[in-house]
Length: 76
Image 1: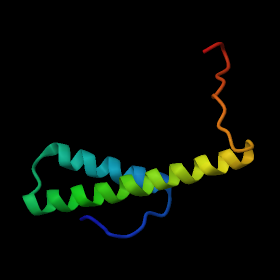
Image 2 (image 1 turned 90 degrees about the horizontal axis):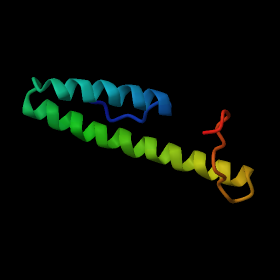
Image 3 (image 1 turned 180 degrees about the vertical axis):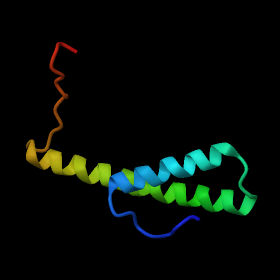
Image 4 (image 1 turned 120 degrees about the vertical axis):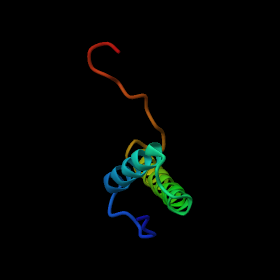
């Protein structure tokens, strides 16, 4: 069930994480499978955090080393 491979992308990791969460929320998995799913979930969260940090660094480079507030059209 739980893989130990690197996800192909941020989106793939999020999709797999959502699937794992749904399966774990059902609560019908044996303890060993639940622990493996929890471990895989941790791996996926760390992967996603790394991808987001890398994207933030790229934005900082593109914006001159500072993040700017996101301006939402329509006054919010």
